[in-house]
Amino acid sequence: MNATAELFPGFREVTIETSQARLSAVVGGAGKPVLLVHGYPQTKAAWHRVAGTLAERHTVVAVDLPGYGDSKVVGALPEPGSKRWMGAQLHELMTSLGHRRYAVVGHDRGARVAYRMALDMPDVVTALASLAVVPTSDVWSGADKKFGMGAFHWFLMAQPFDLPERLLASDPDYFIDLTLTKMAGELDHLDARALGEYRRAFRDPAVRHAMCEDYRAGAGVDEHLDLEDRGNGRKIGCPVLVLWEEGKTFGGGRVPLDIWKDWAGDVSGRGLEGGHLLAERASDDVLADLVPFLERG
Image 1: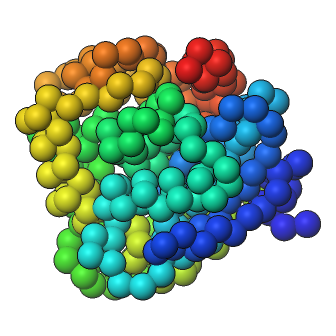
Image 2: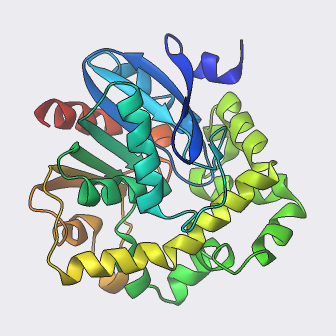
Image 3: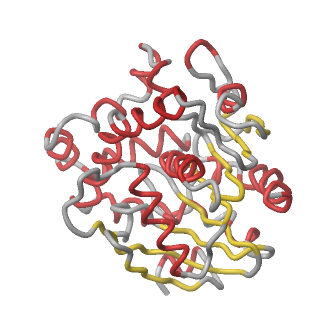
């Protein structure tokens, strides 16, 4: 049995061809559909501690972001890494599976794709859950020395091709283990099978390149789209659940809940203990808030 099958018992593995990607996902359960979108530097395996419980009441789709994990980008793209482009590919995935309207739960980079989908496709996204992030434009506007020293990869990986790709290629295992140790506290806090999936994916130069394109877009087109929406007074119309690292604040000492209230009218949430990888380190607490939120949505 492969690692994905072990991590998601009862789920089926699917590969869906979209217009510009070949997406790898697992699907399980029955009921109202929920799309789970992971973050950097992970894969869909990040959801293994919450997906089974959600599948008791929902049809759950956990996908590798385009370019991450086993999801491949097809062809040369005008805006690779753009959250608008990623969201469009994920929507094609969901419609291929028969889901026209659905909730989206995102962590880290996946949450950035999720809120962009909610803004771009208000008739599609029925509920949005954001784990561990605030919108990209708010991150940049509040970036300071503390942020730069702690989240140096935001700047490193956004550098023009192919400087970061060359640097990451020198010792991929060291870099991803260092990154995940910082996020999880200790690598032992992660399931060994999930950790193996993260390492396997990160060893692929194409995956590392896709991650860099993701961060380049975050420093460019993604921020531009956020600022454009803010300038036009555009807000997220669906209910929003925000979960974050307890004690984490952003520019000016603002907590994520207050920042998200600038972006949506129906926002709830709280800080959780467990660090950045909430779906793995604080899965019970995440589910305690996420299950009733999705039922309401």
